[in-house]
Length: 162
Ligand SMILES: CC(C)(COP(=O)(O)OP(=O)(O)OC[C@H]1O[C@@H](n2cnc3c(N)ncnc32)[C@H](O)[C@@H]1OP(=O)(O)O)[C@@H](O)C(=O)NCCC(=O)NCCS
Image (tube, rainbow, N blue to C red; front, top):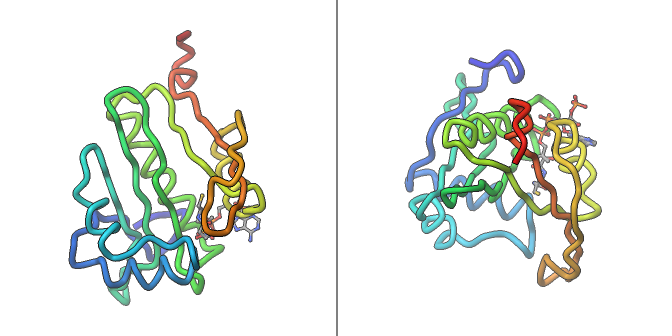
């Protein structure tokens, strides 16, 4: 049980979670939502690590997040909190699980993209130490929305130079 999000536990995701993930994806990402097939492939993809946030009392998934590690750096693939459960610390809990995993794997940096108008996610990432370093025009389709690229240097955690 987490102090940051009381009553919520982080656990590994399995293919049985895909229907619940599809429901959250559709609600959170609309036209840009991943399909059931993409989610199934992501859960077992090379270098992928996906976790869910589960409401311990109800036993239901209330959030999810995924990381890709390529042997050098890590990429936040997605993070989402069910709309009814946002603002309870679940996004922060999930992000911190991904960052712990990236450190355990020895990743040098963690990268991500975020829509330029996604204030909740931008604030979450910036409060975790991510900094903006580039702009990808039209990154999100079909909305044709721009993305900030962000990075968190984990080597800086230990004061090491690259
Ligand atoms: C981004 C998201 C995952 C945050 O999840 P959450 O569980 O609501 O986040 P938390 O309650 O853990 O809040 C963590 C921090 O995020 C920021 N944040 C969350 N909601 C916010 C809001 N509505 N406005 C501004 N900042 C917000 C704050 O910095 C907050 O820290 P604080 O509470 O100390 O101020 C959630 O809004 C979401 O699922 N959005 C839709 C999907 C999405 O855009 N994912 C990111 C793709 S890049």
